[in-house]
Each structure stands twice: as C-alpha cells, then as structure tokens.
Amino acid sequence: MDIVKRLVEQRPVVIFSKTNCPVSHSMKQLITGFGANPTVYELDQMSNGRDIERALQMLGRKPTVPSIFIGGNFIGGPNDVLSLQVQGRLVQMLMDAGAIWILKKEPLNTILEFQQELLIAILRGVNQSLNKILLLSKAKPTHINLIGTTIGGR
Image (cartoon, rainbow, N blue to C red; front, side):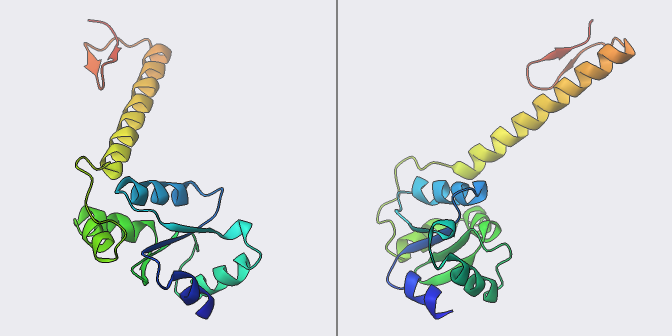
C-alpha cells in the first residue's frame, strides 16, 4: 500500500496501466483529451509491477488496471471515471487537482464519440445480419434502413 501512496503523492493524475490493455488506453485518451498530462505507470514494464498490482488489489481493484488516482485520491477504475464524466464532475476534479487550469474551448467528448461509434458499429452489424437473413430466406421486405443501408426491395 505504501508503494502506491509514494507513486501517487504530489502528482495531479496517476494511471496504473498495462501496455496491452485497451481500456487503460481509453482512460489515458479520455484524461489527456481534457488537456491533462497524467503520470502513467505501465505495470508490465516495471520490475516491481507485481508488488504494485498486489497493493491495488488490496484497494479492491480487480482487475488491477486501469486504476486512476486524481489529486492523490483513489478514484477507481474506468466505470468510476466514466461515471464522474457523465455526472459532469470529472473536469472539476482535474481542475481541483491542478491537472488542468483551463478547459479546452472544444474538449474532446471521448465518451460520447465512443458511444456513437459503438452504436454505429452495432447497427452496421445488425444491417449485415439482416442482409444475410434476407438472402438466405429470400424474403423481400418493403424497406428497412437503419443507418443508410437499404435492405430488401420495394
């Protein structure tokens, strides 16, 4: 526990990560999108990474990465950070910690962009599945258009 405390003290934002973790990458993108420059510890690149992971587990983190600290306080994992963002509290926490001073005029709204991209990907997948079903069943619906792709005939 002391090892984690030493690594996060006097740093506005700390992210414990692993180089191959896409969720950790997303959290780094979100935080840097507001103009913050987090201290990132890649546990799989550190000689004492396993010791740090054990300490993070003692804080209740499973999986241990990403683990985010703001202003020396343990925030939690990605769900906790996203919750703060949705509540509109993340930016103020970053400002209070001295991680950012002025919010960018047009901040990256990473969460909404991610949700939009995910929804589009899902709808495209639904479109492709419907196309396959229609081809296999030889059905001809009147017209289906989920995101600009017409399925079937008129």
